[in-house]
Length: 323
Image 1: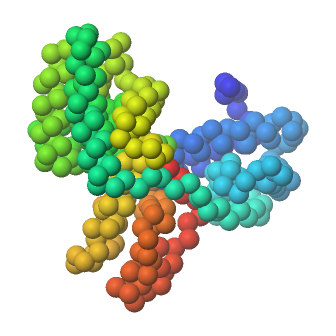
Image 2: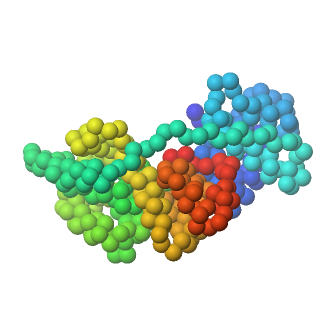
């Protein structure tokens, strides 16, 4: 679908709202698409309208019979906030419709055991080196580093695939993550052992793809595709385990392992949680709340250590990034 080029009666309000939220660093790219869909809906269904009306908003935000709560939330969230923005500035008296309560996420990512991780990375380290084709040599040195980076840093699969050479500071051990999920750039600090591995990889891969753009280059000089990632992970994983898992589970493992490590240390909950949230590229700290459901009994531990109820520490989220 191609966005229309001519403005509508909503365009000035949308531009003002968008500029305000972006300036406040409170915007994600997904909102652009949903706001555009709402604007197109109003133009097509109310062709003679010159102002936003309650009927437009209510009809757009009404939950469809076949629509689950989370899907409805994602579709209407930006529009509801547009209404709040206009009301706060006296530009409309429309009542913002309620947002459906967030449904519980039923998918639980695989929880890696230490033995599974040992076996998986052993398989990564023992890929065949024959025949001596460029893609075979490249795969042999890329796979062990690529999946260890995901495991040790918690970055998303697309962030790892699209990582450019200029985004990797091999002197200070910092990744500048540009291709994130509906979100502005963030930085990830590498563990010392991972940094050394990245340095060794960079030197080796540069002999195969000199002057490359992407840190993990494909044979055509671009970045690896999601199909490449899935194929290689599935092939290696199936050789060591019959359990169902995806490469994205490394991100969940990273979050849960960090949270578990807080127990028994000087608590410092707020600081640790903020650092984890920023490192993982979450838009705000509430988006990291999802991982609590993956740590058994953590709510009880928090209450015992802080004398506060779990929901007082981590409030209900209006809308969060579901990963």
